[in-house]
Image 1 (cartoon, rainbow, N blue to C red):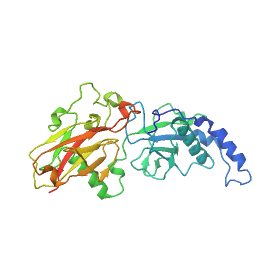
Image 2 (cartoon, helix red, strand yellow; image 1 turned 120 degrees about the horizontal axis):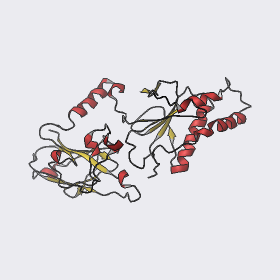
Image 3 (tube, rainbow, N blue to C red; image 1 turned 90 degrees about the vertical axis):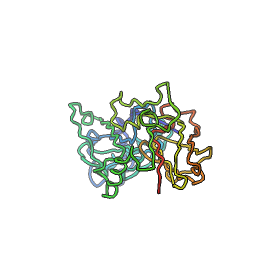
Image 4 (cartoon, helix red, strand yellow; image 1 turned 30 degrees about the vertical axis):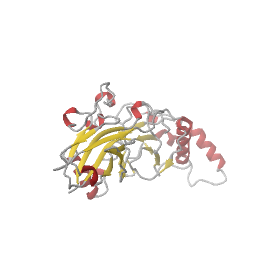
Amino acid sequence: MPLCKPLCPLRLKNLPQRTQRITQRTQNQPLKKPINMRKLHLLTLLIIFNFSLSAQMTDLSRATIIAAKKIPSPVRETAIRVLKEEIALRSSIQLKESEKFGNQPVLALVLSSEKELAGITIPVNNSDLKPENKPEGYRLVLDQSNGKNIGKMATEKEKLARLEVIAKWENPGSGSYYDNISDISKSSHVLTFSDDATDVAWWEGGLSRRRLSTQLFQNFPVLNYNDLDPNGRYLIRIAGYREALLRVDGERIEPTIYNKGYEEFKEFPLNPKFFSDGKIDVTFDQPEESTLNWRERSKVTDVWLIKLN
């Protein structure tokens, strides 16, 4: 999968010249109002990722571009085109445009005077250094809220659902089990362990505010469950990154939900045949990721065995 180094330099300083060329090409189609090229000096490049950038490589393969409508034409069109060209040059990724934030990473272009874009608040620059106000300048901003700012959710139902996830993260209810894969105090069903420190993310020098369980992981853990209800109904829920090729008692299980981002869920309903004897073994196949840096390979951070009845 194509990757791009985090916050790779983008040649936005060439925007004025490129915009001038567009203006010349469209001189037979008069603009509604003249373009003040100094508006480019107020352009903020706001990059919003829904995962940590602490790893050496960043996956932009699903990223989209959102550009504020208030950026004047042809500056807006040129900024989008230049951003697409620069990312494609470095990674062969062809970025698409969007109008709203979702679960995918977003590269957002706004004017520094704007306070909001598609319902997301633009971070204020309180620093004495204001590169966006310099000729051909711009500002890079990183937002790692993962799109889960509860106050920004559209409906009360979405807010309550997210609050319930937070409240029950480590306490899924009677008859259900939770394991923080690489925390020995919260992983009673995990049989494997890492002894080479590759199970700790150490994002932002250990200062990341992400959920602690998200920063502890194994690539292919092995779990064992006993004392299950032979008459119960169960599903396995997994949080992690990228793939989770699940097997139960040696048999591959197909998911009904399969999100690949951190703190997003994959869910695998289980056939009753697996726990008719009151126990199951859980393993994971290794996906083909030989071209990826180890920090970018698939990880399992949390596993739930949830009783449905």
